[in-house]
Each structure stands twice: as structure tokens, then as C-alpha cells.
Image 1: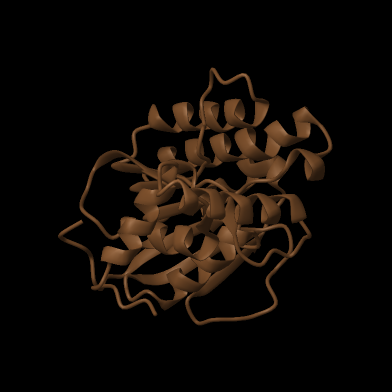
Image 2: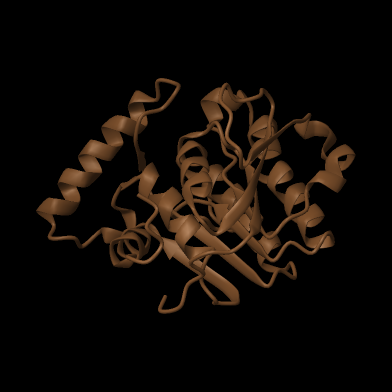
Length: 234
């Protein structure tokens, strides 16, 4: 990404601000000189304030009631859950497909320029695995929409501090990291990635001038962040 927006007065829209990637994404958005306002949509208001931050407590099952609020330049969708937390396939699909799809449709209707989606490695609507199938269905739906740019981020196992105890993912992350090292990086597509790296890559990508659809697997996310030297987000 050779040309980037360094300073502007854009408005960012963020869904999933309390999640692992979303928390880091919020930090980077608030620190970025590219944004004058960051609008977050949450079930429960965050316990801090910032001059750029505009919070909206909403009912995600009634998204149509908040359409007039979903207006801005770049929308960051970091929503996601697990089968264990959701409790059923229907509940999982509601969070990981229906919410994201409805948000994207509203954003498209209101002329949001860019849609940035946290998906997953292996996302495929034809997958035999329900998790990957749902992720793939949302990707396919979003790709059909008329955003100036659509960015889809496909991290493998996410590393980082969570509000909830998901020891299985932590163990998988350690094992995958070690196996990738032992195989000389043959499985880089599936190598674990820090949630902070995903969030930073999202904010970096939103400052580029690349229209159309862009896909970022785990190893591409890490390269994007390593090559970034102009936003000075840290």
C-alpha cells in the first residue's frame, strides 16, 4: 500500500468494540489522525470517554431502529461469538451472519464508503464445518454489496487477552505457533495472529486508495503491519 491517508476528518463506525479485535481497533481508531469521530455501537456503554468517541447503546435485534445512526465513512465490523457461548447454531448464526449482514445492508444504503469485516481463515459457504460455512456466507453477501472498498480479514487463531476464558483457543494458538515454526512456515496461512495485529491492519487498510474487494489472510495481515510506517499510530 504505497499511498495512504495520513490526516483527514473521517467518521469511523465500529461494531464489536468490546471484543478481542474490536477493543484494539477502537484504540487505533481513536489514536489515528485520519478520524475526527469514532461511533461505537454496543449493548452496554463503555466505561471511558474520549473527545472523538460517540457511543450508541443499541438492541442488535432491532437494528432497523438505528438506521439513521449508521452513517459515516469506514465501517469496522468486529462482531463474532463461539458455538459454546451462543448455545446453538441458530444463535451463532444470528450473531455471526444476521447482525453483520443487516449492518452491511444499512451501511450500503447510507453510502458508507468502506466495509471492513473480521472473518476467519477457512471461511467458505460450501464448507462442511458450520463455523466456516457461516463465515463464508457473510463474506459472499458482503462481496455483492456496492461499497467503494470491501476489506475482508481472515485471521487464524487469535492471540491476546480476552475478557472470557477460552483456553481451547489459547492452547491451539500455542500449538499452531510451534508447529508453524517447526515446519519452516509451511502453514503460514493458518499461523496464529495477535488480535492487536488484526486491528491495526484494519485501520491501516482503511487509509489506502484501493477500491474493490481485498482479502487479508493471517500472514498478509502481519506483513501489512510490518510494512506500515506512515500512520504513526503507536
